[in-house]
Image 1 (spheres, rainbow, N blue to C red):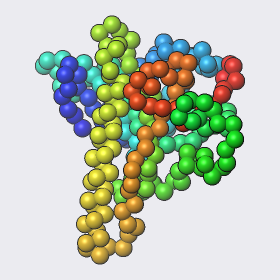
Image 2 (cartoon, rainbow, N blue to C red):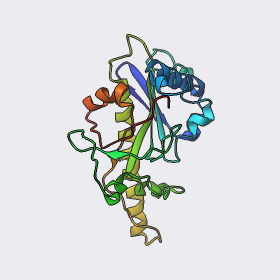
Image 3 (cartoon, helix red, strand yellow):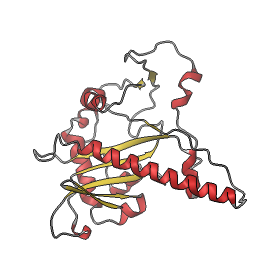
Length: 237
């Protein structure tokens, strides 16, 4: 999907389209470079977020999408776009964290304080949802929790502090709502035709975001995200 917005153009693609697109390697470099420049590498033994393109693509599920922003250049077509300036991906929420040990999360209350005493039934809401969404287009209705991953903006005075990361997320959110609404319409048409299928289960959608608080916590707080749980990671991980 292609749209115009201010000084930038954007594309939203699924994992198969991303694998075939000519900017896939520059996109990998953008994410890895942002990982280092954003000081994320301080908390890791690796100087890059992903070792290969396939490793990056492996973090996106069937219903995941990638938004990529390019600077608008008069006279150039989509085939000429090989220099992405910002990106973000949206996928169904996963409880496991790539590259980190299995650390039990602790819930956080509205004031940001860690809750020391809580029961398993309280936190079960945040665990990874079952893999019911493989297969046809209707399955997206069973996914209620989503997460943005691989959010990156190219370093440069003309690009930073312009809200490009939040713009990518807003575009992905709008795309997700459009896909969910289309799936609802498809389900209703099948119900009217008497087709044998699972009913429309879609309810509210939740966007959950993971970040290194010491680096990006303040930024995401300004965008309206509030802490719900915390994982304390050992030094050097």
